[in-house]
Image (cartoon, rainbow, N blue to C red; front, side, top):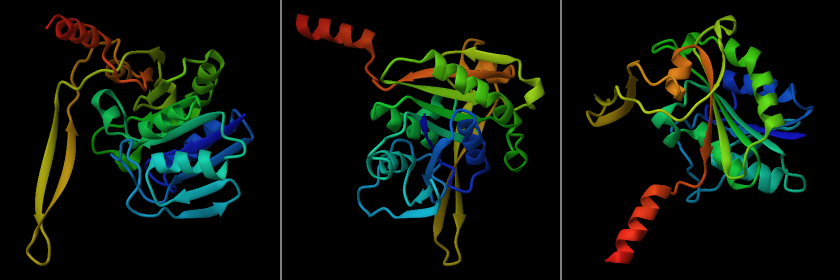
Length: 255
C-alpha cells in the first residue's frame, strides 16, 4: 500500500516523524510531502497567486512552499501521478483538532484534499495542556497510533468521508481506549487579538486562541479526549445540512 504523509506544522515538525512511523508500521512504500514552513490555521486554502517551489530532501521526501492542500495536490497530481497513494495521513498535528477547530485546521485540510481526490484519508492530532507546547508527550500517538490506524484501514469507511483522530494529552499508558464520537463544540472559548508596536511605531496584531476546559458530552470528541480516550470522528466532505435543505425546499416551494 502506498501512503502519503503530510501535515500543516512543516517538514521539520516532530509530529510529522510520528506520522511517518505510523505509516511505516503499515507499509514500506511511504512518501512525505509537507509544507516548507508552518501552515497552522491555513484550512483548505490553495495557493493560486504565486508559484510553488518543490524541494527534494531525500528519497520519497519533499518540502513544498505552500499549504497542506498544495502538498497533497503536488504529491497526487505531480510527484506520484503515475501511481497515486492509496492512503493519506495528515499530521500528527502539534495540538488538538477538536470541535470548531476542524474548520480552521490545515491538518484536517490535508486529509480533506486526499478525500476530495478519492483517496481514504486520516487526520491525526496530539492534544496537550495549555502552555505545554514545547514539552508535548507524543507517546499516545506513537504507541496507539499504528493499531488505531490499522484497525480503521481494515474496517474501511464511505467515500466522501475523512477520519479525524485526536490523541489525548496523557502518557500512552494512561490512554483508556478508543471512542468513535461526534464532532463537539467549544462552549468556553475565546479569541484574543493582541496589539503590539514595531520599531517604526506602527501597530501590528497577533490572533490567539485561549481554550478553557469545560464539561462536554462524553459522546463528543472533546469529552473523549478529556477522559483520556482516543477520539475517532468521521467527517463528511459534503457540508449540505439535509434537515434545512428539506425545510427550505418545502417553504420556498409553497411560497
